[in-house]
Image 1: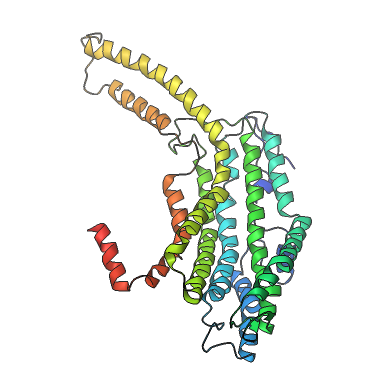
Image 2: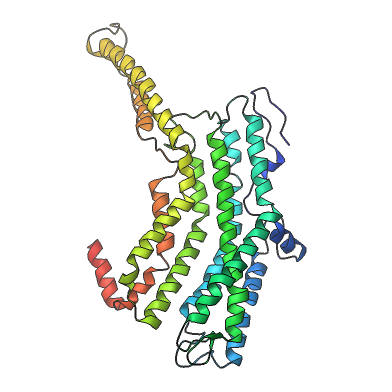
Length: 401
């Protein structure tokens, strides 16, 4: 499993490390391979998207049409915004995210070795952490447990919740509800469990990623406080949050559908959900960006020691610079113009500036804003339920001009 040891003390890159990805593994992926719905690089995504729509959305539409609940007054399947967004937008996004995460994150792990961050004698532990993460990803038991949990929770909560809903709805039989229609049965026992499985499978992958980062934080990492990424050389880990943006959008779509249903069918207002939306944004940041905080103690220590070391070096340099150029210590025949001393002073200032600006978490503030913005974007159109487009444009223009 481990690669060969080079003269520098680092093992050569292993095949597992080069192909590291959170996505292509597990029974479902192997089933998709055999069904020619995917290949080893997760191509053929259009087939998987079509399959998801065909299984989760289309049968409900057909059954609703047969029972006369496709269009008309009341809550039909066509005006059920939550249903349409959940299975025509959110579910495809969760599937499309697999390709995005696979392409963007597969190179991240290799950066630990490419940047020579793994300390001498740590190569075997690094290779073991990579192999362990891949074993968890490929676990058939884990996926089976997720599927069992989805149907157990569905039997206890989802079925009861839909049967308890009152009023005419396309998924209920009769005016007062209480029994699921054929379309409702497909929704509760097929469509909802499948999208819940997709969500839980992503959370499980995040658990694998967090566990891998935890093992990396326990290694003797050779971090450099003057690295220009302002994260002592770990800035590449922030790219993982960019890879997860499609999943943030999917969560925003799910929130938007839930809120839209409450607005149009229960008389609620968008402002009634401000706390839920804020809590959802915070929770997503904790779940997706939180694992990067594992390196905070490392970065805090490196920054503290770097400021001390570079502070001492800077003090020595500026004293000698002052004595040489401001107090007449320079030889009479040494010209000031063209001297490298000033440039060296500037370079030292830049290095010290990098140390001062080193972040405790290897992700930029702009990436955090982009991630939260991706979650909020699908919810913003619901502002139109509170004001017209013209008034909304005037409000936004007032913020700028």
